[in-house]
Image (tube, rainbow, N blue to C red; front, side):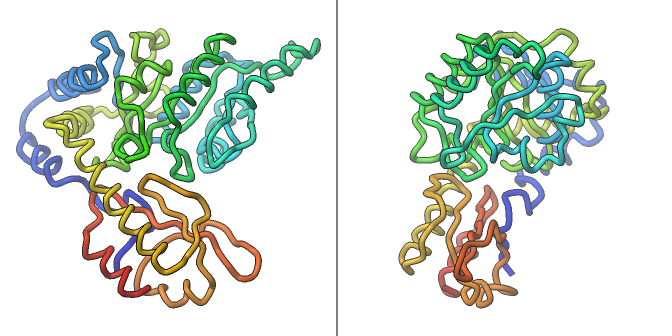
Length: 341
């Protein structure tokens, strides 16, 4: 059975496994002080055009969001995100567990609207009782969003301008960053993204790595003692080399974007297959997650043959489903889906 349930059903790109095996007996320092981590960080700095950037390698997405947000906020501050944002829905309250409230705004195709953000901030500070409230301390968005949509450069520029106006850092969750950058709809690249936020991360777990995320503070603006904060939050590997080797490999010869482009190619084929059958979509996603609306009969006909996710129910026995491709999706899997439909 072929699986389209998510973008981390496979292990890791073969080049990563090869390098892990080749370097297995090489002795290196721990906690990210090894030569592989040093090389990976240098390659990331070069890729984003920020030689002064602070780069940290953490173990996973939830730990990364939790560590970055808690590390940058004061105890009385919260983080602004849309209602469908990953930190607001699918992280088991990790942010609230750290003592910070997620302050939610409406979502528009999964994205934050700059107008909504400014109206919220204006309303907050015009309330004379705001010192009694949770203070906004950061803005969080993801690229791509939970619905596979992406921000345009102009949208990011306006959001970032509002953040600077109110002196709020902008944090971009890049768990699927490669798939956003490789989308034909994207008009930003890594250097542009780095210039339009205060911190972001390059997702590895969902884009070819066994595990790991690379957190980037583009202007060398990491909070004081951020390394210690990472360790305190359980996001530091003693054998940091495992992360270093993976990101060093992903950022050698453009591998990260090459495998991301493959996922997008497969996703566009999936999209075309559903569209050719007259099947509508819940959202028009230009990335690796596609959301066709299927009837219960169509779902039954696919069950046991192709794995996918039921996203949410709709009236009249219809369901939003999610079909996700990845760096590892094989063309024959897409062909099999086409034959079943």
